[in-house]
Image (cartoon, rainbow, N blue to C red; front, side):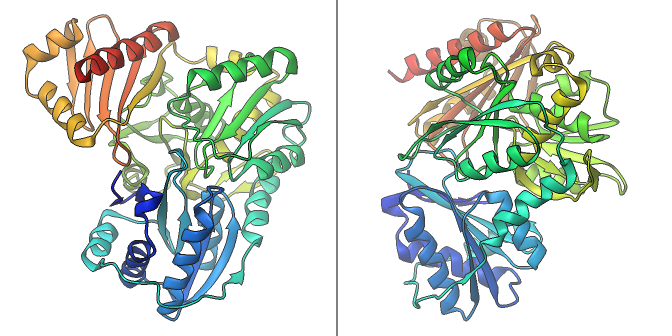
Length: 457
């Protein structure tokens, strides 16, 4: 996986994320955006993250900036602290991808970088040694400020709930336990790992699903929750250990927060519109930059939220929790959808499964083929775009609608939907499916990916 830079940041194999390459991108970033002489840095728990974070710090110091080290913190916690300080930031993380890979996420003083920022960074990039030795100032208070955000808004709203927290190697593994306990829940830490485990909340593997179900059998939990590696995507399972898709958790959270406008990618569940609860629903391409652009285009005064099928949730208005105000946070967050959903379980006195069952009966599933070269994925999907006969032969069903917003999304006469999309930041081909029941959606994904794998064999 050769290093690739885009609006979502830089990703690549650790061995190829050399000091000169990382330094080149950091310098180009700092020359492209206002910084006021300061940069804030955070990192996840990957073995390579400390080394890369030091390179980021040295690169900023070589330009004369004061560097603030937030330490090992969730990405949204870093973004919250940096936006409050009016400073840009860099998060060292590979998110959900394996530990042999890593990356950098770039934030301006006002939020995630835009397509215009991306173009300016690419134009200014050239590899260069870091050129200095930084002496970062301590900014570990970012962690506490992030926790205080939810304590102030939710008080003890989770009192009476029993929650398991799958800790694995998430950078939020201890903080999530602390926050949920502070909100009144009884929390049991589960599955802590000294080795980095790549958890993709959008494509939860069979082994993880079984583990969650096994924990649920004897735990008596109202829910089991977790995050991906840098904690900007939630993982939520009900009392049986059944994983609730991120766009369903997003919908429950939007309802709980009183949103009247939802911005979400085309891959999200059409149940959102079917609820009839939102005055506006805007569909975008996949990726938080597109969701953010859609949120910013909503009318002034709209109570707008955004979320993706992976569960990452963006709050675009000044909301209120049970105990107090909850300011906007325009970057993907894992804690808010977890907390907002659990607070509804406690408030309504219903199980999480009952809350989900009350939504319109549309079910989604997703998975991916890994180690598929991006060029192959793009060519395969493009071939289906352009040839209706080929689509009919591959899918074996009558199509009723085609959406090319991002990848290829096809609606069929039986009411099912299949969506194929080459990943933008990893050598993966993703498949999403939607149907009237979970078993059909899951089978559609498995069958589609199996047939694609057979074509590559």
